[in-house]
Length: 330
Image (tube, rainbow, N blue to C red; front, side, top):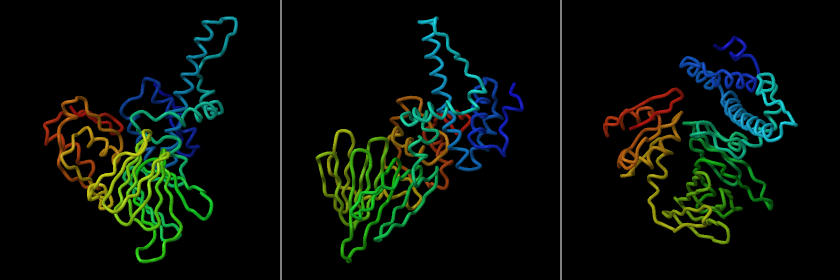
């Protein structure tokens, strides 16, 4: 059983409280009520969610470090080491901060149930289901979609810029009919996009980036390759360089700005990852058969919780719901 000392005090530091939650949930004795209580605590504010994400990562790294020390003790018993993962060490946090913080930079959270450290450290960030608009000088406006992280860049020579750490943005630069100003630059993964008078959508998933020009024109560069996009054109880039320039009407890409998700005969293997961006938890497909099912539908983002029952009814799927918003479809 958990003790009262394991229960987070609402007045204590979020990081200490988060470590208490980790201890409680990984004790092997936590029940559904514990998970629900954690959900309420995380929902109270952003600081709680960030602290819990980091505490989980720190715990995993320290556990692995302890295992490595145990192996070393077996190989060389003449050099004993204290491998006990005590609550005192964990709650102290000094070791966790030094070891866990560095490793967390390189490790994605499981199922992306919480943000990575690079996302949490961004200058601008939106949470699940949140949209935000940022206005800059020289008539530049950036609208952030759900789960998006941006970091400001100093590019010198009066050139403004942002680094798209993750997520999706709609950018409007300059005004048509006026003299072009300095280009506005967005760095994303291995490439960059620059524009003086344009409206475009930019999305980053890991190292894969997609750009759609909606109005005006822009330049996309990746490595030694460059491409000029005009309204109604789309291109992707990543580790392999620039993809093929293609035509698009931009209707599906820009639907999120109207609060919609539009799918045109897409397999559920592509649909579900998109839906997961807008809801808490994770929807998981359990078979290739289900993943191949085609969907032609439009969903309202303010009713995203209706998606699972609608998919289950439409395709006759079985639904298994777990705490934390995790749902299995089979």
